[in-house]
Length: 302
Image (cartoon, rainbow, N blue to C red; front, side, top):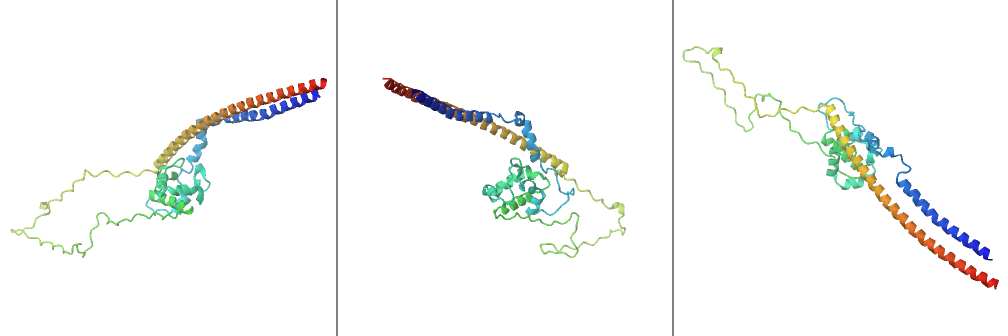
């Protein structure tokens, strides 16, 4: 009978050890996973992260617009979307809100269109300024933003083009028979008076017209930027945004690792304390069983 009691005590102790060993093993596996045990360290370097992000940041930076830089009618919001915005918003690249996704657009619409205009014109996160198309005017970019927001339920009015005043061409003269705006008639030209000696002045005696002085204060006209310069500027801005995103991602990864390590250490400490407490409790129970068994064995032997 004492042998059966000993076997039961041994089985109880083995069962307790097995139950306590499982959470300890799980915690050790979790710590190794959080410390990058299953991740190639070469993939977490700044250069590797930048190489993975850069293609998305530079996506569609090569302008697809015609090479003609002449005047044209401003694009509608739908036209702007089909020209450049669809490349990211159709698939949700780089965290861009999906087209017609009211859930994704709702928080952005709540910020107001002025904020969205500022982000679209100057660039935001991985989105370059004007979506990477430097030929788009500010009005066209704003129309594109309003179009996408309206497709998600914003109900904003598309910005209208500013009214332009028609100016007469340089060097044009008013047509004959037109009166001045104030209603007065211009004075008739005075008849030429012949000189007293009856001779007519020669062509050489006519005073020559003095040339108009050049306006030295007028600034030189600003030379328009070429398409290559605009594309280079857009690329530089995209690279800057990418570097900022990489730095921010590295900081967040380090912060997450620190927090995970702290939580894992706390979990290990807590598990050790529970293990020690359960071990002590199991030892007490085993001692009690041994004492009870010994008493019963002595009683039987007597």
